[in-house]
Length: 407
Image (cartoon, rainbow, N blue to C red; front, side, top):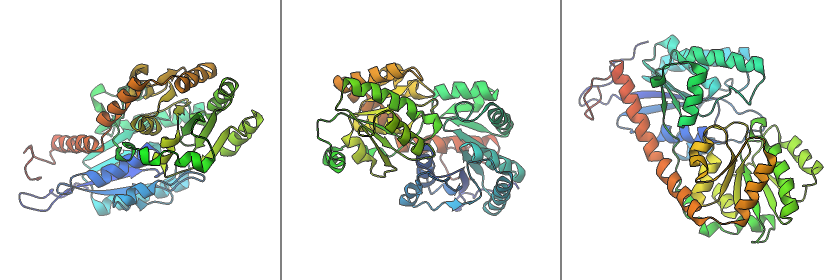
């Protein structure tokens, strides 16, 4: 399905991009695809965003896309879970969409969408195929057999990808080792966000604590994200129990939802933390949440570039995290936030205690400056536009005419 010529001088032809993601659940990938779908230069690009359905208990973040004027095409059968009949239906739907839309670029995000989207792009002859790893599922998610299957499929999909993107250099090194592709095929393009809502939180101070009936001097520690096994909330709760022995007034906020919520609530009760730990479910008023926290923690087994750390740093909230995935690079090896070894409950509790009892204004200022410089949404859009043009030119779809009219 070679696309028709992309316009000519003075013509209205634009580069058509089909962006595919498994689901618009709460997290960085949903924000990422919404910003890219809305932000590409409309004089040169048009985008169709395709998304699957949420799994039970997942928070819906499609409102971000809607707020930016992006109306995604929803494929109900495209889900995170492996389901051969539904996956085949999703593949057929993607083939139909691609034949109708005739994209010049297919850009996939997340594992299931990446596999099905790249297969459909191969079958329909799309000129340029790009995939973004926002993390990976090669450990910490599934059992040995399922992980091996995913790895085999990802290696096959990598061979039909013109570019594979990761969010940081650490993730790039991991992916390169797993996929066994030429290093130049894997590139780093960091996340981008609209961080303006986190620049000045002073009008929001006190709102969260008033809602929760907590005093202004109560140490409040938050963990924000999906309640899923890979996030290892059990480690967070175990560290919280140790911290309460040292700082009895400390309280802990678990923001998010997922399949682990009921077991985690039961675990908190069994640990004697029923009065210290508050489960809020999903919340959209995250600036107000950060405005009320003294510390943000990540206790995960595996991470890409966690949004909660970026938002916390932009908000001027200290952070503590396990040293997994792209976190050490994000925190510049501990310069911008505390890093602890995975599954080290005593190390996590110690780091939480230090962060609550010692205010390091220089580190907080450096962290804010870093994330506003590195994770600007405008920079992300510019990087992606340049990548698409480079790859299309390499395929002969675009002549090398610099910034002039697209042909």
